[in-house]
Image 1 (cartoon, rainbow, N blue to C red):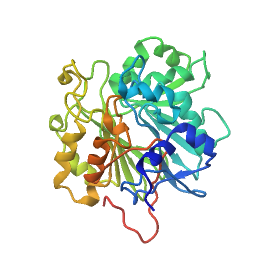
Image 2 (cartoon, one colour; image 1 turned 120 degrees about the vertical axis):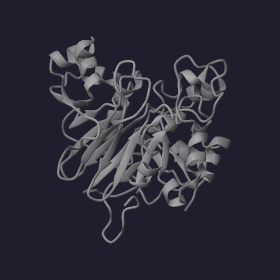
Image 3 (cartoon, helix red, strand yellow; image 1 turned 135 degrees about the horizontal axis):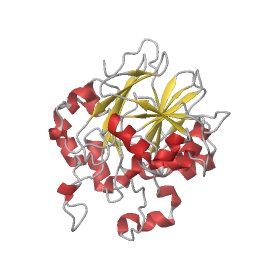
Length: 343
């Protein structure tokens, strides 16, 4: 049954999740239409992908913002969204992996614990980093000796990212004290985490001041997903984003800005991202079943698509796509007798 879109979005917030006391949130990859309300589900024994945040690096609301885009969000905690992050959970082994380590790590780890309980803290088998912009790695501060004092947490990093963490304080202290153990990654080289989960980083063009930038393909025997929160423009990439979407079951893609001119008085060419409007036009030739896989993530606080009742959100929905929902859980195990969407 489809419900009012604004009530759906409000129920996607962290506060509503905790207050409702839901043990599990489930959204199978077959449900990729406009109904973006996370639904309660029973026990799991496969692999799931959990969305822990959907906002751009500064979060929603953003520090110091007194404009209409954030004004009421300061007053209503149900509208707030954490910085872009997803987790993969193997329910059979109890292993959990985070993709990006954001400034909202504390709340996101708590949300993950609420959805998928483990005995130890942080209860992570590893963290995969996309790049060295503040919203994607600075949550590592929470695992240092001033905070959790984690021992030997595997952190997967590309070569420049590895050097950045090793040679620049305070992150180098995490390495020297072995709060984290850096695990080398190379573009397009699969990392087999266990018999059910394989992760493959792929490099994309972005503002690489301190590190490379990658997205991730996550494969299980049943389904596959991509997590790509940051890229400059689709046209700058030497790969076809359409072919990548067609090859998986769900695609979390860069939705930072909805349209050009969204930030008045600033040259948006200096912060290039594929505008959501551009992505909608580029994907128009894809079959509806392929467009339905797309979920926009990493939305800037100025992006009107954060609002469930906005023109921007309706435009996305009419195109057969949607905005990722904080707290949604995607089943990565194909039910017997049902084909995978992407293959």
